[in-house]
Length: 510
Ligand code: GDP
Image (cartoon, rainbow, N blue to C red; front, side, top):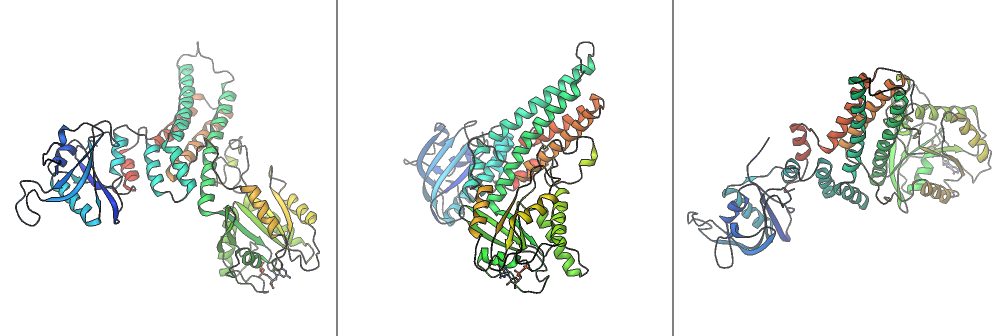
């Protein structure tokens, strides 16, 4: 994988600007640039300049260039050239950065000269890849560079900076050290049972695994916060036909996009609409309802509605307050609880069905991450037949299987707007402004999330095995798998092709 070529690219965007930067890195970077750079006195002295210096001069055609268009030695641009000698550069290789005037044509012209002088065009992300391969930064920090470049808001910028500063790496390293320590302890005891005793160790390791999983779940919680900040709080609006779901959506968004009719089942598919409440953004999803139907088109809508409920951060459950509660309201409450219970509380968020895999079931997360439910008792402009307490009682009953469900009821009207202010207030109390706390580590990169989930799976297997008195030499394999997954996050023992894939998603010149 060692590549001794010298690479070059325009590091600034392809836009007309005050300056542009052409970056050249590799063992011949200084020699290559020396062929096309002259100082104020017309000398080619780049190899004599000290590291970390900025030097005034001119980019010129090489002296041996045939005297055609742009003849030998012709001045192309007046520039500043920075010289960084290995290992004191971004890539840890000899690097030259040419600050040119920032025209697209001029940058391209100078890049061509650099390539003719012996460099090759860099692939996207190749400078950062070299920084990683040369051991200057680990993988999470390399990826943070990419996240920082692509950040489109303050939250994304801050989380990328935390990562760039090494906050995630140090957390991962610490977890790895602890896992390795325990693995070594087990191995030692298996090799030398006379001196190392593992009596009672099953309980000890099980508790430790819970602690590690807790830390990983916290990292993954940051992912949710990041997504919420980026896309908005996913809010499913659910309720019986004609309760006023579309009207509530329209009132909140003031857009009139959802079709409002008095024929039950009009909203056949899900509708999404973004709405901002001060600092918080909601992605409202109007659902077709989750009651069963024989109509094939409605069936699709129903399945999407179920997905919307399962994937929601928040549920607005609209109840027609002008009609007395019926058995159907209780059924709907139970249907919602059923959908949520099938994917709540596993150590791998969003992954269902682990409870049956061993005695420990939901133990690793310790929390049930179900969405908050706000019951909107609608049509308060008409005579009210339902009280907040009545509807809360129905939902408390249906949600009694969850540890700490968040249930709240608000009397409101999509016609007069009564109660809408209270709904916004509750949302703000629940989700705050999504601001980062000091020193918090956030994981928003999908590769990291997937590897953290792999780690949790291996830890769960080890914990199940320990609790079921499986021999230590078997679950040591699970612990090592967790160790390896964590290692992949920071790029320890990373496969070459994986590194290629990661860095190719970088932009040119980085
Ligand atoms: P959905 O089927 O739950 O989406 O219900 P819609 O939003 O289509 O509303 C059904 C009917 O109830 C329509 O005739 C609405 O005008 C009416 N409606 C909705 N919200 C209110 C409300 O707050 N007050 C009154 N009086 N009528 C409402």
